Length: 368
Image (cartoon, rainbow, N blue to C red; front, side, top):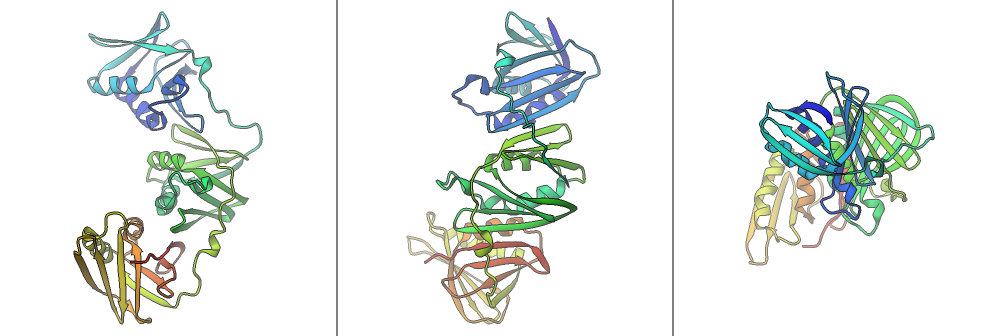
């Protein structure tokens, strides 16, 4: 039975969009499959790991009979990648198998019942709706994404904390050693809301968002969140937990302020980090009047040192940091200069952008 005909490139694009959330090994074999449906002249492809679900659709010129099947995601993806770019793909159903043909090439793939696929449905409750430009949401996420914890026993840190207040959205991440905070003004009033979005969801979302003015509709429920944009619908469960009081962590009265060219600081740290301890990745920041020395040592008694001219008039200071944490921020900030606010050698450092109240990055010191 003929199911549909579609261009290889169009079909592959759909699969590429959602393949990232399909787990290679799963306790439920059907979750290694994709749910493929045709209805109302549109082809829908859906993937899920029961925590996050992504569905994409594509409108076809021809009309086919409605159908729904599931097939192994990785096998289908590999087959389509191996096909010639401009080929026409024909899908047929035969004896509970999916037959995929292109000219003289043919594949027979096992299927599982579509009714057994665990589709995540949005709750019946009325959601809070927020509209935001794709490029704005993408920038907000990338400014703080690197600060999320990975597999921390404090499960609420394995995600990104969002705070909605008035017309502003704040995004926060922390792994206990650093804290990232960024804020965006949407221009639209919204009810106060706090939610934690899982790390995997954030990773997939930032890959899907385009750097343009097209709009994202965000639907916030008590235990779920849905992002709708272009031909994509992403649904994710939220993390149920209490995020730490991040505002207490952000220093407010650090008097020693260094103004430095972002790119020069980034390049200097990258060079000296070559000789840093591979495990601890520590570097000393030695500050004096209008001068910064960055020093790295390793277990082989090797040392690297860089000197930079900076705008600094505070007290002399010798303080250590994990260079990876600093590089993460410098690689994301798009400002020409950055400000670093210091207390004493035992206090955290606050990194900000001059004349910008919507970004703050806190790094705890380390002993070297």
